[in-house]
Image (spheres, helix red, strand yellow):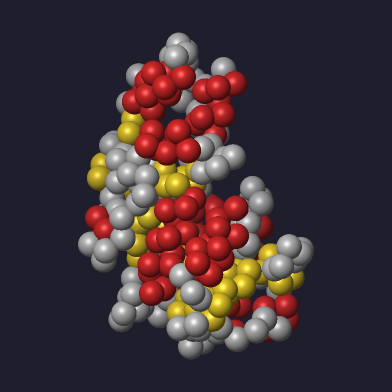
Length: 267
């Protein structure tokens, strides 16, 4: 494997390209508008995808731009179909989301757990996953991504907008952007390639919402946020679960930042 194409060269994708190049691979990014060294590509458009250069490995990490069901179908479902048709022999990795797990009783969630999303967008993600898995690709279910310049938890805490929902015992599942990029590199580098497999990509230390804010209060010398009701309108839905990364770690991957608070000094 020498040539890698990252479709969706945004916050995660651009870091993935950097990590691939650092590993000695010939990596290129593709984004909707192109620019900054990336190819222009609308992953939902078959003609645009057909014009992409050949690659030994392809990563789909394009985002829906906070869109609804229609955007999910275009970017994820049609995007995966188009990439499968264009790159039938390439190693394909699709970055899905751990939001497809809708558990809300604090369960430990592995890749074999039930996936019954509470939103239609989650069902579209699952359908997109099936397209990739049936073609021999790999699905990486990412927890909530945070990293340099991007952390909803940290921003809300520092801005004074954070709220501890009820007793704060809801589990928060996250993954640092850089660890996610290295996980993708790890997956496409595995020999043999784990075709048709699903891997959760999450921090090793799952914290409660209260634990996160207690840690931030200690680091910054600030008071805890006030308590309030559940936020049922969050993008990823309201869940209460612990996403296990044991399967991925068993292949040799380890996150540089085991938990969210380990990364805070570097954000």
